Length: 258
Image (cartoon, rainbow, N blue to C red; front, side, top):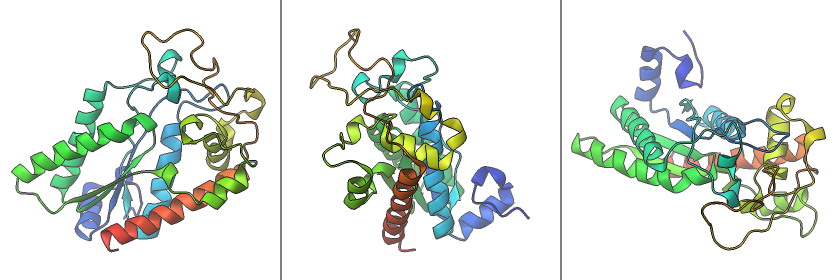
């Protein structure tokens, strides 16, 4: 018998048994997107998947396969569409992907699902996908599924930010693309994929309070890094990860009465 936290590593009877026993399922919505010249395209897959795995192990849950493609980035949140390797979905496509996955899990008998956003632009389209799935499940008479949606980066203590950033240097979450937070988390989780000698001196980026099409040349840093990543470390990544896992575990446990 295979006893894995990863849904894809189980046979269907093993998966069915865990679902019937009430295991919550975790679904990360990631992206394949540039994260500067020093980090891999898989940052938005690696980090939320690791968060899902760690929390699932604490609450007896399962981790569904991560969605590796996300919605298109805006220049002000990474500008990924102008960089080779970034592979994105239209929002309408992404919504239907989320709808189909949530609907399928509901039909399987999943009662508690945690959708973990790993890419900024996936947040609100995921809401629409979940809503559409609920409408269809309701028409089928399935009304006992509960879904929790969250962004993992919201689950961190203020004291941790104060510890990892020099006073007054936190640029805000909106500029933490390929920057200190994500780079530190990757150094903690997958250090072999990070090349710190290639970290640029870019950031913090400055943008006007609007988007514009076509994007003007020089609208964002040419490296794709929005804030300084040079102070990144595995230790900072561990501190962040500890917060993410502990606080999300607490939230899931409370929301689902585990």
